[in-house]
Picture 1 (cartoon, rainbow, N blue to C red):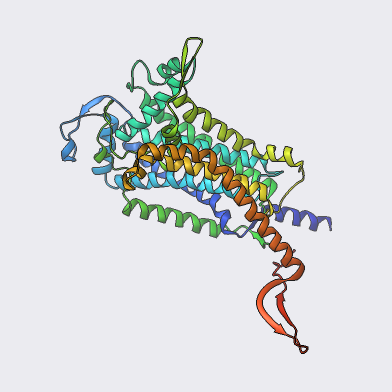
Picture 2: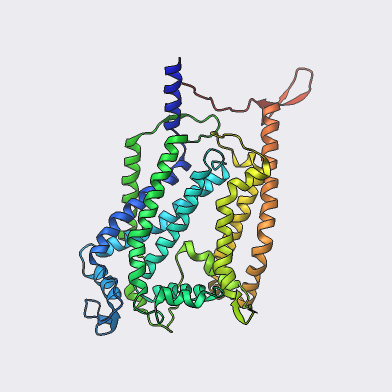
Length: 446
């Protein structure tokens, strides 16, 4: 019996729940592998040098124009290297899907309570992967040294200069003696291709060890079975195939259309990657406030939305398992997931956070909204300024009421059965509704 118990315990730790939402983690890992492969190809041809040269490549409109070596090599990869444009676009799409998969994985962990003991460290790993994934993708957009790259560099300069006391020194440390200088892209290049991927790889290995140690969570009554290597390989091939199709048919980041970066120039319609949209929106709707403390100016218009707000957001996100444990007093071990409706307060908090993020994300398009709907840009900006504070509490209240209502309906069904809408007349002439017994998934034991 002891041998059987040990075998069952080992099998249950390696078991997985066959549910579609568990694919988000695999999608993130598979996208990361595609990024490594395509990034290795691009590294062979990319030159992270900001020295100015005269472009003499195959793209006629820019021929004879002074550009950096980084921009020229990006054009060569896109237009002259066989398969280069395909690899660039696959790499870019994989970066976007990588961050999206991590975000969806965190949402699944949050709304199902999969962050509770003993998986608090697993939650912290995924939050760290999200932050590093965003930074990695963002540094990748800077490397081509095109006009969109310049916009990201301008944001980096503005944020570092807004830091009190050390902002100016930190800016010189990052950029050198002038902006943008010739040092920033080589520095970000090594950060992008070596440091950040290595840290992400270590975190994925740590996550794998945690899963082997604690096992997979499962939904109540769900069937658990041993993980299939064949299905994992099939999903990896499917991920690579979809990314290849996107890279072939969906154009993204056409740097030859944006042109090389020139300080002081702007590009119409330039927007950051979707994962950085909330920062852009926060900067756009923040009033132009500035303080002076002990003779030192503090630019709140940049410091608050671009540094303090995201810092507070991700700190609370990382600490949420411990915050919930402290508030609820729940220190038990959990291997079975919650349905979102059964944790009304947590679900409402998550919905409020999504509303806050979504409103900031939409605020990044305040100019496009005003233009396309023929509205006053001033009015649209003020709408988002009010909505980011009023929207999340409203979403919290509505979501909590919905969850409580669904939970109450489930309770009534468990007591009296599910309403069918069919009426039965008794021989005595009375009428009654037919109720069906609620469906309960059959728990399979081994």
